[in-house]
Image (cartoon, rainbow, N blue to C red):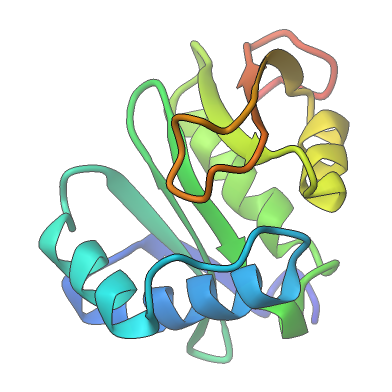
Amino acid sequence: MTPTDLQLRPATPADVPRIAAVQVAARAGAAMPPAIHPPAEIRAHLAAHFGAAESWVAEVGGQVVGYARFTRTWLDDLYVDPAHQGRGVGSALLDVVKARHPAGFSLWVFEQNVAARAFYTAHGLVEREHTDGAENEERAPDLRMEWRSGSVGGSP
């Protein structure tokens, strides 16, 4: 994949089925607790809440291969199809979030997802809070990471 192969754009409601498929595949391939919700529920949730947060997709060859969903203060989702990981898709999506919200944002990541934690750390996010997971559906330890403009690797 070359940089010209990757296209970023705001998501539309028509993207929801592929966004959901990316989330399911990415979670299944990551060091994360098993998904609580089946694919149909994930798709329905994303469709029902579309527009409540800003969503961007990454496309290669016209196919959605990753997405980010975020608000002014939180990065709720950033998932990349496993077949496209390690090719700059996640970095490009994270750059969109940083550019759209240069004052900063936070996200939650599972403690056991060492690869995601390393990715976010390499992109200037810092660990701010660790929990025992009592407040998330999976009941798995997680941590809040934060990005602020001017952090190492943090310029938008």
